[in-house]
Length: 111
Length: 112
Image 1 (cartoon, one colour):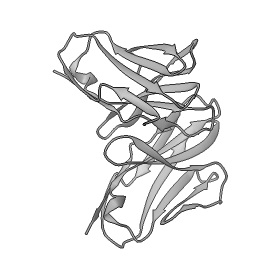
Image 2 (spheres, each protein chain N blue to C red):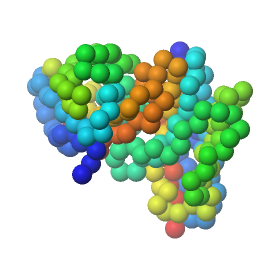
Image 3 (cartoon, rainbow over the protein chains, first blue to last red):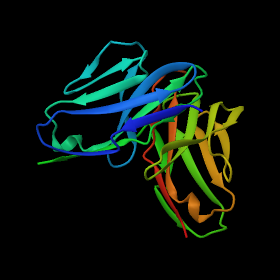
Image 4 (tube, chains in turn purple, blue):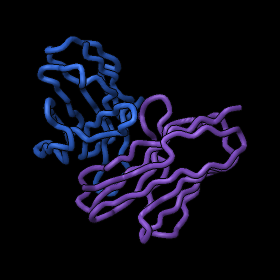
């Protein structure tokens, strides 16, 4: 059975801290891994990773994939209260039919 | 205007009632999906459609049905709602495989 596991499930940090969110997966026929941010309602796309070792960056957020060890990390530096959200990791298989989501990491950044 | 819209945004209904949730998109995407989200369980796939004539069951399709009326419209029906179908329901679209999925704003459904 395909599995996507995120850790930690929740996290509370102070503004300015750096956080690392983890996503490990056990799937057959991996195609890509995606990160989404979910604030009040709809998840919004952050990154898509398909190759090992290539960091994707967007402002204070960055992510990298390790296809040998089957995990990805999402880093957020100099966190702000606006980073408070649920961060979802999802894996797409080669069948390409849908995404397998992890349960998410709930991040709270306090002032 | 939003590219992916869902109606209604909130709905409270009673056990046994038939409910339809609608999704429309202006992105011109062929692929459409319905997910439900429950606290602590992430998003789980209910049904997906790759084009108007292609409908497929997802991980948790029991108790649900769908209709792809047009490329732009994908409806989810609960024929006889039950309380454990209380959840947040998301529609998503994608152009194709390995394309980002774009999510609608969600419908919060409560079944009493």
